[in-house]
Length: 237
Image 1 (spheres, rainbow, N blue to C red):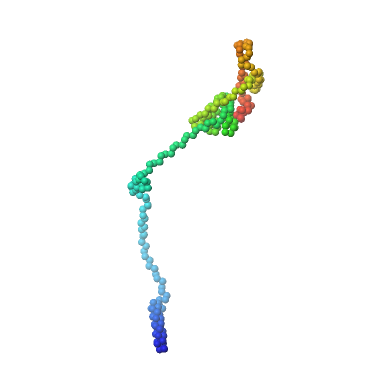
Image 2 (image 1 turned 90 degrees about the vertical axis):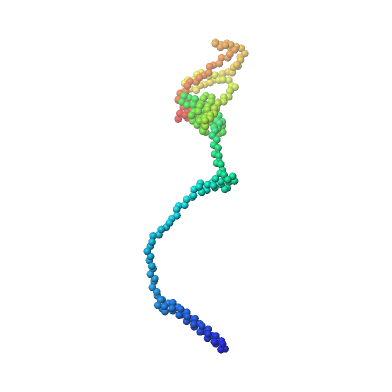
């Protein structure tokens, strides 16, 4: 019983001693109440000195021919360790060619003022009229003659001739010469044989020949006649 009381007394004394030491340490740190409200410290201002900033020079790639001369002469990723030969230039494109066989000649109209070709477009079947010197589908009509025309393109030319189908019917003989500005009238002549049964007698006609009438040559058309012509009226508007 006495031992337990002594232990409690010693513990109480130790606790009192520790608290006393803590109070003394706090009191000495605060100056026993004199350092509770300390004045604000005054900042120390130093005179400013110029600051020099050293800038590095601009970045530039080194000279490739000098620094990597060996690498350029013997590339690392080329099996032969030598530069590949320059690629050959691409072949020139083929020159454009003229597309022939686009039209079929149906007829021509030749006057003092112009020359016109009447053609048929084979792909579409349309009939077109072209004046000499004009172009159609990129083809220029260079020449128009009575039985042929010439197209040119890309220093090439195509000649189209008029295909005439001979008729087996007898040739019609004219009745009379028409007046100026009136269409010619024709009358079918009776068919005759090239070799008659007997000689034909006539003034100035040799025996064994058949006298045929002279072909009718129509008079030249005037401008008014051409305006009334359905094929030429569009060119005089």
